Length: 304
Image (cartoon, rainbow, N blue to C red; front, side, top):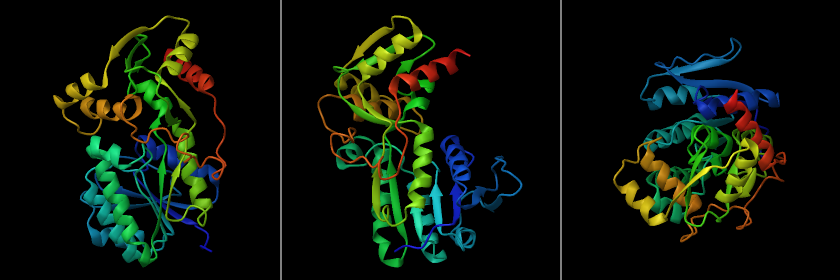
């Protein structure tokens, strides 16, 4: 039986998702929290939270020193460059850390996904490297949650554009894909740490719901009381467009590739966790969520 996890460091706690994770872990009231931050960072934290500052290139010796005494490391850092994550894993081993939660939180990094999206190929390398360290005493848990649903709607990342009431539907629009609200993904991090035995050296798949593009559109039209402008695009056209764009983080090219993981009819790229029997919501005791309620909340927030 694994020892209880108490001392937890969050890396990237000032970022979009890291902020949610940090709040969720605070609410759990079960951990002694610390933060790893680069010296250039302007993020601030409560005065009772110890912040370990390291040089911007994350030197190995500074990471080892910062990681000492911690039971678990939670990474909410960007996935690239992946070599930084490998260095953090090496430092965790040297520091005697028990559990490492890598910066997954997105789609299944199965071969079909990694072949299409270089970002997921890099994430797969990180997970493979963690598996090679199991014999050292460092365990891991990868949390796969699909795309962040509420953020994806608000930002237009899922190609639903609230202000213009415009959407691009890819292929039939009927293919189901699993997706999770940011708050629930953050809650899953805490639940994993509270169940160290059940989640040791395993991927955890979570989802608020499994839906299709057309189901989301139907609920958006109900919530906004308006008929949306629907544009259509095939997988072939989307991939051809993506070739002309870069795939840097947050770029339009990367977005198109990721959307083809979810929406394209032609290939199963592991986006439907429910169909594949992968969901761990019950094990992690995550709340049940309702598609129409979350969409109504997002629409209301956008309008205010």
